[in-house]
Image 1 (cartoon, rainbow, N blue to C red):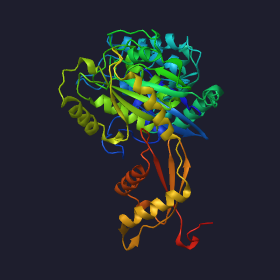
Image 2: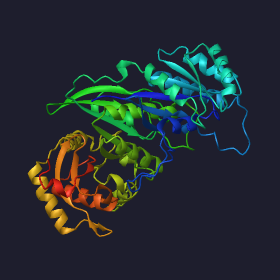
Image 3: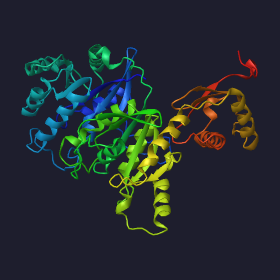
Amino acid sequence: MSNKAIVALVGRPNVGKSTLFNRIIGRRLAVVSDVAGTTRDRLYSDAEWGGSIFTVIDTGGIEVTEGRHTEPLSEDSERFLPLIRQQATVAMQDADVIVLVVDGQTGITAADREVANILRQADKPVIIAANKLESSKLWDTAYEFYELGLGEVVAVSALHGTGTGDLLDVIVGAIPPSAVTEEAEDESIKIAILGRPNVGKSTLLNKLIGKERAIVSPIAGTTRDAIDEKLRWHGQEFTIIDTAGIRRRGKIDPGIEKYSVLRAIKTLRRADVALLLIDGVEEVTSQDAHIAGMLVEENAGVIILVNKWDAVEKDTHTMPAYEATVRRELNFIAYAPLLFISAETGQRVSKILGAVMEVQEARQHRLSTGELNDLMRDVVAHHPPPTKAGTQLKFYYATQVGVAPPTFVFFVNRPEMVHFGYQRYIENRLREYYPFTGTPVRLLFRGRSDKEGPGGR
């Protein structure tokens, strides 16, 4: 697999990071997903420029205090300085290219100098985007920021889009070749352990590998770096990755943990299967759903683990009731197997690796073209495709074009007529035929005219 380069936008509040983020990715991104139940804010998105595809992270998107006050806060507020330092520190460690966004009209502030002091230690390309320069007459003020001793300074107006093409040219030119090269072949199944802080991720890692590899602490946010650990079970090698917890916006305490979304994204892109830990002592939270949504977006396999089950007071109805709650709140990953475990005592932990192998097998499963088209004939006969303005949606041919996740292409006469409900119907019928346990499936619809005939060209 290959990893896209990560470009992190950092800087103090109110310099226009989020506006620049939206400008770079080419759209406003307070996203409502087309996957039912996954409405959420997104903090990252892929961008393309000059044939290069990379991931942009809006660290401003995980600011808590910004935007929650009725009065403007001082730009160099003492409250913000620790957060800005921490933001810069994590970006320095985890991003491939760092863009320091500054207010070109205000000029250099103490907070800008604080960030620059940190970023000068980075062995990473750093670019300064002098923002809010809506008039070309102001562009000369951008040169002041060379005083910070970082990388190239580019004058931009994120609001109007001026100068953003120049900025993207510089970003693409700064991406290290090592950031986008193919990973060395590794036959192990790679597992990411994800969840909110303090749900027991490090404890689970230690229990799985049978030794104290990760620091375990009851203080939320103890894990700072992703940790890889190899183990072999029933002849299969696994690579297990422990990652820092992620909290939802508005509930993040000051500290370096709040920026760990960078690491979670990098981890997900390396993983085959993710273990989504939920705290069984608590209710399913919106942040659990947020993390599950990240798994869908990254096309990862997923197993839901309800942890700390030993600490739950229960009767014969407790487990089915809690599972019903999980299925309702996370209905967009209904395909994910669910286990009730205790990482502390080891309860049912022995079942996890077997479930991982089942999910990985499903991710690699291929349906033959013959059986897929036989299935589609039955699908269409049982529930005919929709009609619009006298035109009938027709399915000509289907084939599986990829795995991990399983990806199917359907050739039709009018792709735009395949609405979400009918796509969901096709997916459900596919899963009735083969469950594809724990893995999303991708359905692509391509147009082909009647004149080409049933076999195509």
